[in-house]
Amino acid sequence: DVKVTQSSRYLVKRTGEKVFLECVQDMDHENMFWYRQDPGLGLRLIYFSYDVKMKEKGDIPEGYSVSREKKERFSLILESASTNQTSMYLCASTHSSSGNTIYFGEGSWLTVV
Amino acid sequence: ELKVEQNPLFLSMQEGKNYTIYCNYSTTSDRLYWYRQDPGKSLESLFVLLSNGAVKQEGRLMASLDTKARLSTLHITAAVHDLSATYFCAVDRSNSGGSNYKLTFGKGTLLTVNP
Image (cartoon, rainbow over all chains, first blue to last red):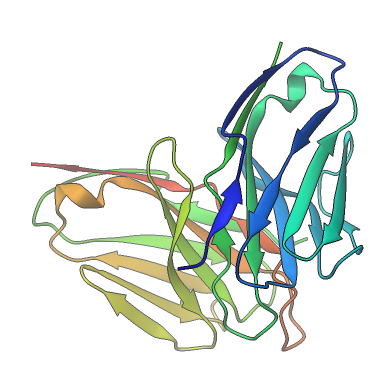
């Protein structure tokens, strides 16, 4: 079974803190993504990566950065957390082959107070 | 900019009944995904539709794709309580024959199946 693991399921952070959300996949997928999900807004793409050390901005990258030092790991970084970044964050990955399923992790619930 | 509209957003139905969820999108794409999400959980992949006319079925759920009409449907047959969840369609933004795997999601349909 494909596994996309988000190690931090529930976090509470203070405004201004630096926050790291980690995502690891075990299926040698080239492509990895970070989305956030908010009620009424659905899922929105923050950043994505098609290869190690490669990253591209999605639709809402402001306030976020990412790191992909190893193929299996894609980290989302909130440099200075703000209350409007309270959300559920979902990591996804897929193989570069037409028709492949895109798999999602369990999600990280982040509350910024 | 690709826009994806799902309707209805809320659906309450009785067990045993049939219903259809619609997913319309605004620009050319030939890849569409359906996901299920249970409360507090992640997204579970249901179907990947890759071409015009694609139809896939799993249990009581059947999904189809009409790329010319830019429409996908998720049909529920003889609903049971276990199907209660939120269902999302997501459209691949690539329109060049390949895929960039960047998805634009609909807002989701909250399905409640009542006994």
